[in-house]
Length: 79
Image (cartoon, rainbow, N blue to C red; front, side, top):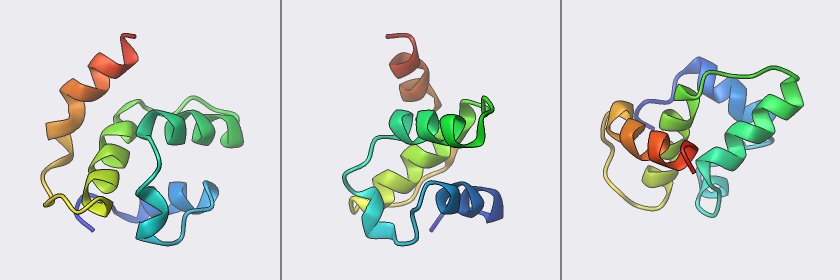
């Protein structure tokens, strides 16, 4: 999966995600909030960009660079 390296795989493990299909019905902001809660630390919001990329791919969209999701993440976080 594009944009998903060892650090994100580690985050997914913390979140109990071991298969791509587990991402289809998830939302990046919820994954990020859950990760922060489970690890008891605030993670860089850019993690959401990568989560958004992975979710998009899991839903059948073609891979694109994680930074293509930055504007959408910033808009989401401003709400």
